[in-house]
Length: 223
Image (cartoon, rainbow, N blue to C red; front, side, top):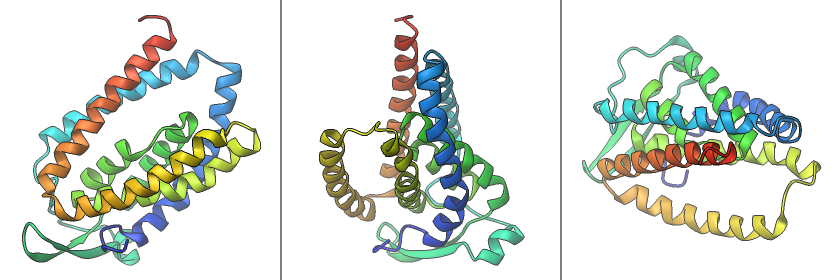
């Protein structure tokens, strides 16, 4: 946000939906763990397969670094989901507009539901939705995704805290690491070329897909 990369207006609109689904997902996640222990493994495998599909779409898509947005829908236009930032690789100020908000909100609701259900980071899905569906430049998509995750987690975590499902011994050092990592990541995201950011996002997405499938199959005793 300090660098002007995260779109606060878009994040606030998106989280009005995703926070609600995140809270529902937290409750469902605890219920599935207690009542349907094998069900979560099938969902994890399905999630990994979905990630492979998103990965393939992003690989084949052109101009994901700086998408060309033609017509902006009326809702996005009224909410003025636009922004600008200084792009070092172009040595110029880049302006952008986001679109397709009505179609994106259900996607973000689904992401929040699944991510909070299993305690997964949602960046793997937020970034493609922001980039491919809403037309956010890749730098903006990555930064705004981090902001959305922060707001969602702050709400959904209380369900787990209330049920005693949080281990402070793990959470406290993790928060410290996330804080340091966010500052380092912000500096890197500002300086590296968008093409490098794309490769990193794709690499993490592919790794997450393989990890989800492996985790799900291991839970079912297949491997």
